Length: 137
Image (tube, rainbow, N blue to C red; front, side, top):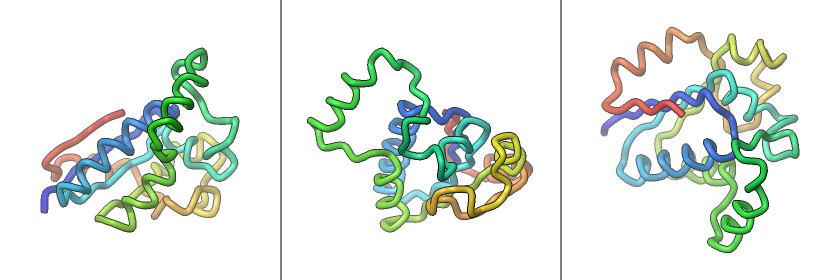
């Protein structure tokens, strides 16, 4: 089984959609995926942010057009897609401890149920060195 590491530095809706799509392709190809939620990524997985109006958009002026396209093409929201991918394959989601602290979320209970644990940045560095593929979004 090959291994992929995804570093999510941005937590924008657009990046979450891209990440969930890339991760979906990897899981379909029987790749083990470790996602590390770095600064903006950590914020996007906080319980009080995920799936709410507190989400950040790279292009807010295109939000309604993008949402219409997602709905028309029956593309699930990225959190729902990641839940399905966790059920179907080897997907692990980790929060960088420092990133969590920056956003006032230092405990696992502060994050949505998709998050497996809170780790130091050293784990991300080590896993990136061991991976067959590394993506940074």
